[in-house]
Image (tube, rainbow, N blue to C red; front, side, top):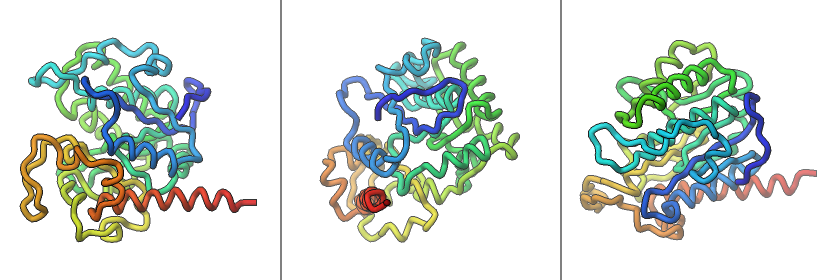
Length: 289
């Protein structure tokens, strides 16, 4: 995950990730480190850019300084990194193009085919059709930098960032993007929810089910398995049938990488499936003449 040459204003067929540790943490959470390894392996044929606070000025030197002060409206003064990341992903895509993927995602195949969809349609995303308002999720996006959706989205966010550093949850995400996608449906491609979010956030307790197998939740066309922070960092309400108590911190916060990989819960089975996919990809490349 280095930083090869990219060209502003042109379409760069890259995979973007952003990560920033919370104050007091020196390294990413264990599940993030494991996801990063899998992303690097499964998408090894892609140009992956890991953006961090340290190298952010190299990519977005003109970003408004409010980016470093973002908090939630009516919250405490602690930084809201989720909203900060929301700004950064959009500005990266508007400037360079490519794919943005949340760091807590497990790709189940290379995302290089998504690059071809971006070239064809200009913008790609996923709609939460199971949600009441059928909003567009921002955890997986892709764009050509000249696409009208990403340019209007970025212009809106630049204006908001220059005016404030306090935001409501969803204010710079689905609230802005969904109307834009609905207006310009002829300039985007929308992936089905089941192919990116086979288990939605409201049902993330299924991650620790011992009775579910990947075949129970994945379709043949599923290519990303999104994770959610609550089950790792909390809070999580009690789930008696699965034997998990009410916890301020997440149920899986203390799980080691080995336990995440080798336990008998659904999440571990998904991790193992992704590792097998990566191994098969490496093997097939080695067999090519």
